[in-house]
Image (tube, helix red, strand yellow):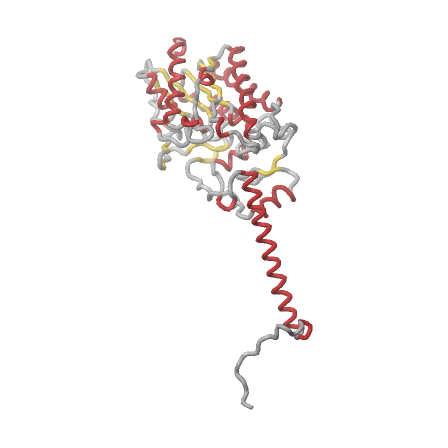
Length: 374
């Protein structure tokens, strides 16, 4: 009989034990690999779904990290806007702030106003002529300069440092402080330090993209293992550093420690301004509360559920009002009476052009009604 050149196929009815040991080992390895891949894919799918329901977005669709371009490291302000930076709608002047170049020295007879705060003063998301400081200058007319010293992420701690060490070169007559949002983010951090340094500055460092950040997890399994299983502490979603939640975390309770530090900072700011002959003006925080309905934190304030933000921020605004009354500091409470609909914002707290115009108009009217500030 001639020799067959056809490849022999395993007999499906032949018991596995009748095959050579090497063949059985390869079969077992292949089967184990298939089962392992199936289990891993199932676990990843389940964790991706869990992440979607707990965080509000799909982890695998998370945006890539932004490059470090617009901000430079700073030894005690963490980060500052980079001078002469320009990209898209964002442009910094030679001092590193949004807005026109300041006249040096100040024009005789002019009134100079500096606006301090976080990203809601910097006005993330709108061009130069649509920021509320730019619109305020337009509303106040000739003879008034308004400079935007807002920096994304800055709290009353950074604004206190700016007041003590930075604004003197500009020789302002008035300093506006739009505060609250970025101070509330440090609420319920365990053993919060007086300078916020065990949470806020470290998170600010990464949110300004001052250093290449760890690659964001695409695997939901790894995210949950690192953040919930093998870590006894919580982790910041951007930088991945750990922090400890304190009493009252994820409740609607006011953190007395954090609120007392905020009050201290406001009192210090007012004292510093007056020592330089600058009139402080306090402005309470306005947010788009239609965005704050979730039973989970949205990330920037990691230990506060969205639905509790309005109540807790009201405590900060009330503290600002009380401090202003006790120190005889101007307080523009009218912004809280104004109806800022969701259509006035580009997101959960940053004004669009229409919102900036309404906000600036309230401030301008306040100045007009208080001649001592003009």
